[in-house]
Length: 171
Image 1 (tube, helix red, strand yellow):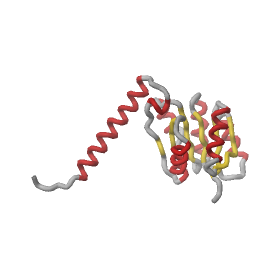
Image 2 (tube, rainbow, N blue to C red):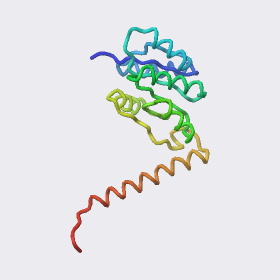
Image 3 (cartoon, rainbow, N blue to C red):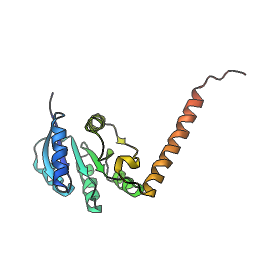
Image 4 (cartoon, helix red, strand yellow):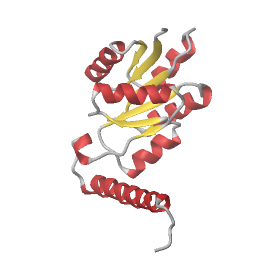
């Protein structure tokens, strides 16, 4: 089995090294460990290998980082862009979607859950996990309001699907 090639990007060196260690334990090879998505683009352009994933820690994100990720998605559409974040707010989620990300995950995710999510991305799926305040360690009202709105919509959708699956027999 060939190792999947990954570029890790983020401002915090310790976080990048920890992520590199986790990924390498899951039969992935980190061929780039950069401070910013812009530096990741330079690695992508200089490598002769086909990179499978670019994982970006967006904890200290800037609009410039999201612009760089959009460029990665435009120039290298086969690469799965994964964004890790401390918190989720509607504007952050919108930026992630606009940047071409295929996954948006909380940084507090377990290594096993990260591996499962990355496997989905490598299969061509998108994965946008709903955040809860406990995932992100952030209890701000806007974050919890957004999560509860998602839960409400999801609950309504499940109820509709469940009701549609009931047999239609006369009473």
